[in-house]
Length: 387
Ligand SMILES: Nc1ncnc2c1ncn2[C@@H]1O[C@H](COP(=O)(O)OP(=O)(O)O)[C@@H](O)[C@H]1O
Ligand code: SF4
Ligand SMILES: [Mg+2]
Image (cartoon, rainbow, N blue to C red; front, side, top):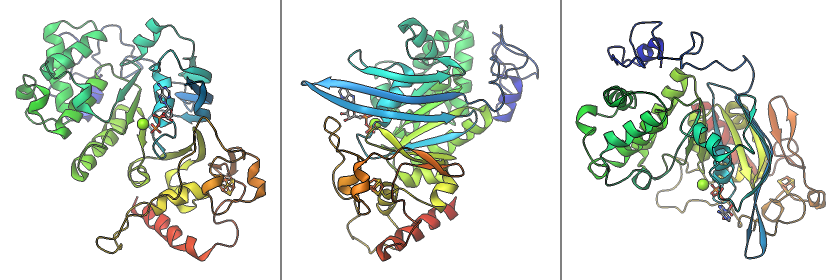
């Protein structure tokens, strides 16, 4: 991390003798290039850092073929946060684990995943290991399970640091304290010597983020990283991720089942259903004009302030499809109020409006609207305006 970035994050007083971090501008770690603040060349301007094209992941389970990811495509440029949202089982985690090479050998993966122009599918385990925790890092939902309960957190962070640098013990210790400060863990010197169970859930998640940052990733994937936290802590962790994304220039993929959370924090939203992207747009565009009946249904399920006290939360009607027996045509058809016979043919994800792609034959808001849809439209506008 360069002096500039360190200063920007308010930890300019940190000095690490091993040469990795130095508050003097221009000082850098051994092997760092002059151009890249993290010692790596910046991607070509305007070029996506990540390009996922027609990604497909299948598992064979009990003689049945489960199509967990079914033709997913998207791009992500550096310094942006993209949300991938969808109900449980829509393929969010499997698709992001595919990026990290973290799927079991039983997974059959096709398509293309290009990171900074390099194809990741087909890399050896050794090459993938170098990438994991280095260029691409991941934070999971359950820090209690991801952290080793028998190891002090300081050691867990320094191990991650030393796996991705030439730092000695002393240098790694100083870097760990700096990272803990960066993720705003209170009293980092003291916490360094504590075990995971001595920390709150929010603090443990901060430690996990510090570990993820140890390899100075250019892409951070946060898979339901705040789902297990209370609402206040969730907001604090999301604010932290936004701050890190902006100041470190990282690309962030936040995976969530919560469209409201995506609306509040992400700049782009990909809505997934049955393993594919069904709506994709910059967040403001999407919330100004929700087109997919499925996205509309998810929006309807967001609790509204004006809801009667103790009233039941609405749920998206119907069940997600069996990924081993997808219906013919549009996979949302059995649950969709707009469905017609046309939907027996599968719609492609196309950019029907500027920067706004959706896969639907009868998108919402482009024809006469049913009266029942208007309330959800208002809710979409309200959420869009809160951003
Ligand atoms: N290792 C596996 N073997 C077989 N099926 C799996 C495996 N991992 C995930 N799946 C299936 O893939 C589908 C998508 O899962 P996942 O990506 O975890 O969903 P989510 O959107 O909730 O993150 C689910 O139906 C899940 O059961
Ligand atoms: S294509 Fe048809 S079934 Fe699918 S979401 Fe659109 S209207 Fe509904
Ligand atoms: Mg998941």
